[in-house]
Amino acid sequence: MTYLNLFLAFFRSGMLGYGGGPSSIPLVHKEVVGKYKWMNDEEFGDVLALGNTLPGPIATKMAGYIGYRVAGIMGLFVALLATILPTIILMILLLTSLREFKDQPWVQGMTKGVIPVVAVMLAVLTWQFFDSSKKGLGLKLSLLHIFAGVVLLQFLGVHPGIIIGALLAFALFGPLKGKNKQTVNVREGEKTG
Image (cartoon, rainbow, N blue to C red; front, side):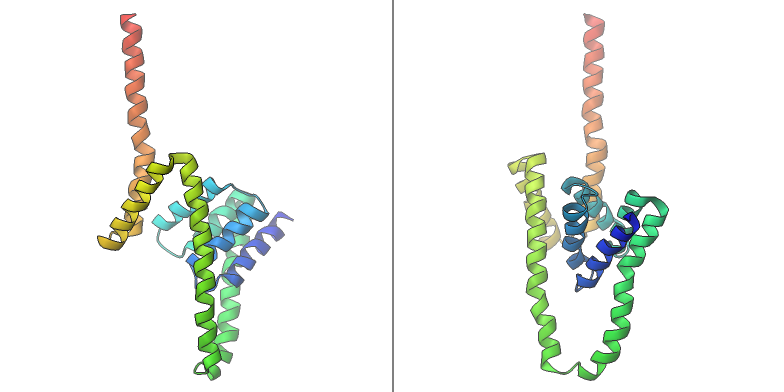
């Protein structure tokens, strides 16, 4: 049953994720966090952040990791297959049939009509991440991260992978420095006391 649930979760996300990885992320979130509860918002955010630092399509990276986490090696393969299968099927079917209709206004309107829906899905996911960030970091630090991210991405043109990698490195190594200082202070207090 777990394999079937994995397949259905990622197949639905793959079928409805119009436009590629970024548009499928809210759908994967809905399945993984909302429906099946395989992880919480914070864990999903960590997977998303790490996936963004690695090369390749985000949807397949997330599917592989989540599938492995839920059901081991077979879960990894099931989730990956479910993620790429819709694309393969739709590419074959749609490209053969849409080639004849590509200049029709309804085909171009269909593409333009989906864009606002994807924007709303990404906005909802962004709000959920901001709300989760507020709980973990506090409002001021969360807003500072958002402001710094906008400046670095939009105005300075820094690649998102570099920013995410720097934040992950800080998260991994920053607190250790503080813990080491506390340990040294406690040991020095024990020696003098």
